[in-house]
Image 1 (tube, one colour):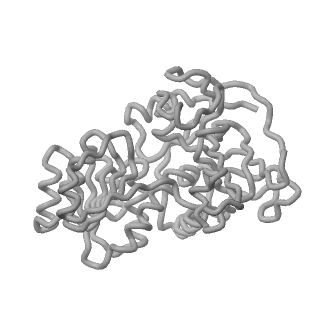
Image 2 (cartoon, rainbow, N blue to C red):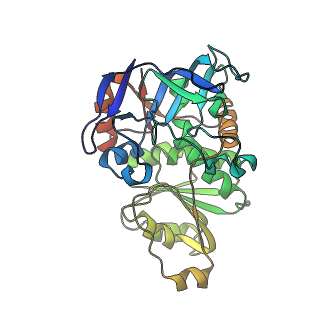
Image 3 (cartoon, rainbow, N blue to C red):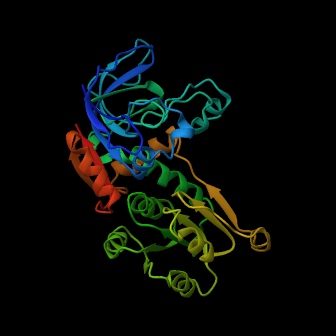
Length: 341
């Protein structure tokens, strides 16, 4: 099969011919990829930012947002059959450790993360296991929802946390209306009655945010914290969901937060530096957000099937991966880039 593999950090991946994956365990599932999302983490991997964290051997196949059709299953798999359309939870989990038994499979003690620490979906086929496979509604095409497998799932995970405390009359700030943020806006509208204030430097992104249900949009022109203060009567927002996490977004976001507010860190790349006395005196909370659980993905697919969450995507053929990476790196992608073998 054809697969896009990273051979050396700081170098462009290459399109290689490699063996097809094969069933090696009773719970294995082999999926023909119908769409594989390309995200900023893929750029960070190429830059070497994940090298020490994963220790993955090169060359390997990137791609951690995957959907497609089942082609083969192991002898113990009963939940799906060949031909079924599916989206894949990004983690391949054991089901036996304490975290898995609690339903907290995101923190599985023996998980694999295809596309991050093992071969992923920038290829024609991918091997995963039955615990990672979520059947798709017949109306959902794999290429249209693939990026929900990680970007969408991460946004859903954070928005679901925020929804627990956002009552009517509350205000939530969304920083960044791009690939993750535009999903987060939709999830917040579906799950909460909160008034949404969306901040972005791009006029196009803010126009998209308006169509997705943002109540207010704020241009990040240096005065964004003051504009949010005006929209919140000088109090700040009960929740700030930061889908950027770098380039000054953290500093701005903390200024937008009210006393006892919650700051959800979703985007990454920057460094959070807040005097501890400010945290104590205002009782603000900083909450990290990893990818969501299998159950979160099932719930997100329900929202997608009902049209409450839709992805804005740009598709590229698998052999045009270089342009997809470059467009993403240069900020030319509105929504999510998806490779389609």
